[in-house]
Amino acid sequence: MNIDKNFFNNFINFLYIQSIEIIQQNLENSDEWIFKNYKIDEILKEFKDYKVKDKIERTLIILNGKITFKRRRYYKINPETGKEEYIFPLDKLLGIEKWQRVTNDVKRKILSFIGNKKTYQDILDTMESVKICIKTISNIMKNAKIDKEYYLNKTDKKIKVPHTLYIQIDGTYLKM
Image (cartoon, rainbow, N blue to C red):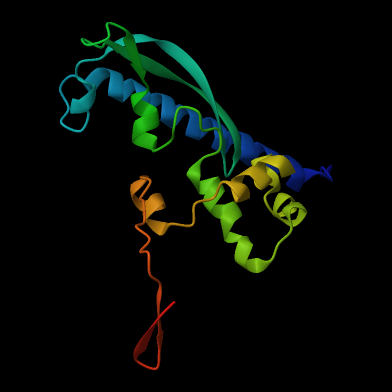
């Protein structure tokens, strides 16, 4: 009986490739569903005035690694400026920006290591399957918004800072 000594490594690589292919296929199927239903579906009513321009490849970094898939780009002519406005409905439904390469799941996972006092190298070693570099981790840490409201609504919420700061000490307020 001949047993492959790298059986488990080969099996893990096979599962990795399969999971990426499944996710890619689901994303492309979702884009196809949007294409078939964007004129009639209530959820997609904001895209009703748009027309399909072309299909463009997109690469995202997800928790399983890098994934490349094709999605449609839509456009409409702005009546005020006369210029074309482009939109990717699949990106909107996924909750990612057009410039974003790292998904929010990966960002959340990286930011969760802050409380554990992990170094960038520790994070990189822990998230080996994500295939990112230390500079990406550094940028995510630098640009992190700590406002919980931002991650729930994805809006920049401005906080009004009063001119006077009050500190409560034993039930009394001191003006500083």
